[in-house]
Length: 307
Image (cartoon, rainbow, N blue to C red):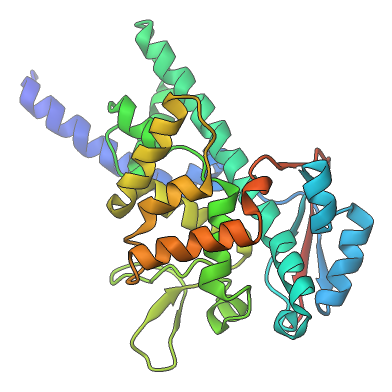
């Protein structure tokens, strides 16, 4: 039985869509863990509060001043925030909060860099007129689907699959969570103020007045990964992605100050929100953390604060 070209293409498209959906909701995390975020290798250590966390930082040389000097952050990941963070003296609160969030931002950026490297390798292979393997094509299709673009659109995919400056991510976490003391941050790791849109699936927290739903997450890492993915995929932040690409084109450093202008739509405050972020970045010298890297380690340490 012969099948017309049109019928074949329609069938191929339908099968591809069904396969992508099965990957997204079924075996994808097993086949491609690098884009879903792998599990931490160490066990979870229960801590009573911020005081116990400082003891961990003592052991791992993870205090903020040590990180600034060495440009290395220990792979210590906190699942949540200590409830007594707001009761600490301001210098301690700010230092501990940054130390808590920073490793998660670095890890997500490392994962994105690895994915971007693999993506560029596949594009180079196609540029040389070499055919992708079936697994490579599946990976590319799923990645493009996750970022909301066409797998054939090389330029757009490279615009989206890229890192976010540490300074910018920290400034937004500070601003949106009130240095980790807001109810949304403490109850649902909602550090970045991501609204829970109608039709979404997942966890959320409702404001006391009941008029706002904020996305909640199982860990700070999950919140950070979702936040950076939003900046890289939502149409409202296309300006940020264009600025980032232009800076890289001219081999200029990515800074939170430069990219902040692309977040005017992130808040109802608009331009004032951009000014607030830039003030935070300057006031707490966050740009100096853009070059910090995670220390190499055979085992990560995960901590969780008791409630």
